Length: 551
Image (cartoon, rainbow, N blue to C red; front, side, top):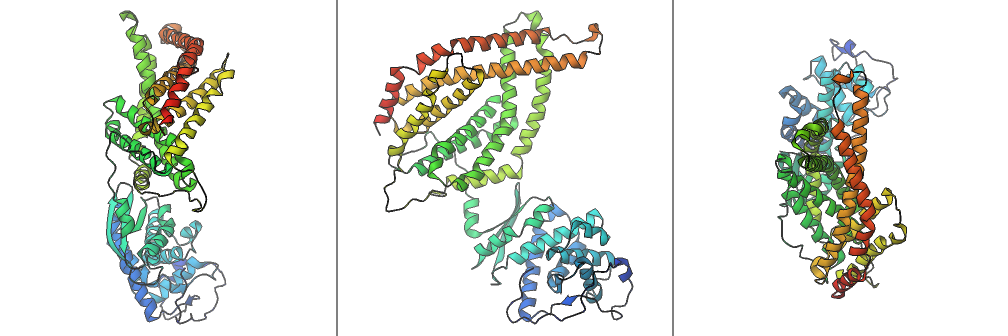
């Protein structure tokens, strides 16, 4: 509960509540003059009353702005109107049963509320507002689940409204409100709008507990950022050799963010699987850029954006992986005689069912408030110069420009790959999988700086791509072999109780697993040659050296 303003009249000392259980129903019908409630009353000053009316007006505006979410009646609005003027009047802190003390107050002092159920709901609102109501108390007040939600909703709106006058200026007002995909946007203005908006966001915990879309309270300056248009796709990042690493990284992130957004509609439609592929690649490149350019930023500035990218990548990846499995299976079928084309149908049917479920989860994520919020916040980050930059002492020499750091970052990635050289003889699949990730990091790092590197950067990227593709195909074959084995085992177990003649023939699935296993063996056997041809040679090292020499 907020503190009393200076000069406010102190509450009357009444008889303390002894904590005895009160039957709310016993209050019904008792004349208000017959008994005085055992609750301390705070007498409001003119200043208090003026603030209460301000909170009331704000709460009613929020009620109307969020009506499509809570769908409460006009009666609920009247309860909110009353609660706003009385939510701080009873002092409930010292009571063992504060919710019942609030009910006493409502019953004996609020003559305009004569319906017992409304009294109980109003008592719950007051106790919730003051943080004195626990879940079990709802039952003691005799409120059903719908009434509990109603009381919680009204109390939550009151808490946000009161916080919008945290400054006690009385001059913060709602300029605009809008219901969007990811929540209710409330834009406030006034001399203390920024501080009051921050307080309102902190005071929105009770609203969040109701399960509604969030209420986002921002001031007009923040609103200008949040309404910033998303970036359009461009041909180049626009990186400069003499700019700080942080701002070069921001350009790279913005470039790939635009690419992700560009393919979002096609991914949602699902008519072209390449849209999903391109959107997933963009999220991967953004995630990798966080590792390359991360040292230039505060970790706390990148953490929420990285979390959003990971969630999006998981949602896209599940569908994309199944697309790859089915695409390679179809290529295998195309090379078979026509009479064997239906042999993989049980497997394809299984994968299609999995893909439908994965696609539903993907769309649920893309339609979620969390995804919309991630896009908005990341858009602000990539379009706000020097946002989140790690501060360094102005009087100390610190290398922070692209021309100073790009060669170091590239050679660090190259060294991480070369470290695998002595360990490649008969290397297990797990080690080669780790190497594939290191190759991906090397390729992305060179690509990020390509616009400021020499022409030989293209040759270096193509060489790395050959290794990355080889190891990527090996990983696909390994994963496919495991999945096919699991499918065969599950199919046999599922059909073991059926007569032989009724069992589904999965001979072609077994043949396909053997083909993928043979492909896995071939890729393992030929990787050494690919390593020597495209990476572990003077030509590759010379290409990298000449690419960075222009810096």
